[in-house]
Image 1 (tube, helix red, strand yellow):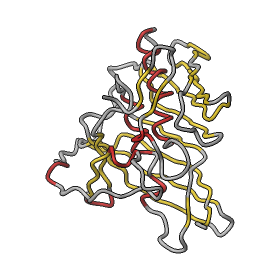
Image 2 (tube, helix red, strand yellow):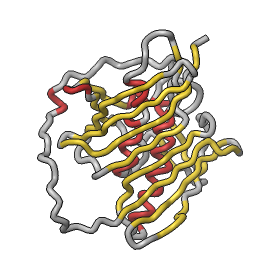
Image 3 (cartoon, helix red, strand yellow):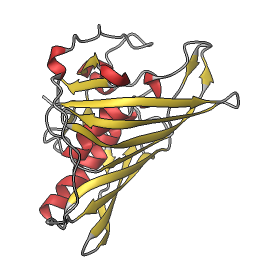
Length: 247
């Protein structure tokens, strides 16, 4: 069973595993729902592959039935732009813009030698409890610390029933800023957006992130990182974070 399921009225229903560390749902899960719908539209209309997304988190998304509004903003010969929104309890909580690209193929551009990493040989980290004590989206991941500062994620359950390539990256990618956060002082660090751009879609179950963060005394943080599958680098992630002292 997926973390989010559609009900008979066209609303997405999230399980408790969709929750984040703070109030409401984890942003990466909400982003995955929006993007998975857009990837399905792109596939149905033959628009190409979804290769980048920009997500804005307007307010916390509550654990309530979610309504989405996917649409095609522009369709071009080489690239198309699609958008989606999430609404809950009569309020918009998030928006996503996806760029879909038609590949050309046959270009004489040398590619990097693929890596060959067996992530399953790395011992997983112990589970990490949410601050609120309930299930959360982190419980849905098997997490392993790899070489060169790369943290590997594997979904235990799909976010949506028919997981799509770009959407499958967003759940892990949304944790990037939290993977390299300061331990003192005690701060909450919700991200207000999420941007991911891929050079190619991931192969296999594991998504790796090599995170880097910048924190300022003005209460603003930046998370960024390189994204990997077991064969090499696949893209980049970035987000802005608001730093809030714990009460």
